[in-house]
Image (cartoon, rainbow, N blue to C red):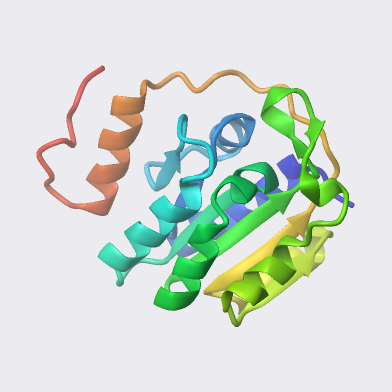
Length: 194
C-alpha cells in the first residue's frame, strides 16, 4: 500500500499532463501537493475542512469546458458527506473526486477516523447515487484509473503518515488570485497582493 505523497504525485502528474484544475483539501495534503508540483492550476484549500469537494463541484459546473479534479481526505469527506449526494444529482462529466483515505486525521496528529474501523466511503458514494466509483491502493492501478475515469469518485487507500514538507509560502489571497487568473482569463483579481 502506498503513502499519501505517492498518490498525490500520481494525481498531480496526471492533472498537469491533462491541464486539469486541481483542488486540494485542507492541511498537509495541500503542502505535499505544493512541494511536489506547484502550478497555477492548483487551488490549495487552507481553511474550511470538508469543503474541497464542494468547491471542486461548483468549479466544474461553472467551467464545464475544464476538467476538475478534487483531492479530499477521508476525515474531510466525513465532515461533508452531503456533497456526495449533490455530486450524484449534478453528475458533471468533467468532475473527478479523489478521496485519499489513510484512516486518520493526518494533519492533526493521526487520530483515527471512522474509515479506520467500519465506514466505507466508496459504498457511501455509491449509496449517494454516484455511478462511477472505484477503489485502489496501488500506484499502477491509480495510474490506470486516472487514464480511464474522467468523472465520479476514486477512493485511494493509503498508509497513514505525513511527508516533511515546508509551509506554502503564499497567502490565501495570492493563491486565489493566481488560481482565478488561470480559470478566468483577464480577471481583475489576477494581480492581487497579500
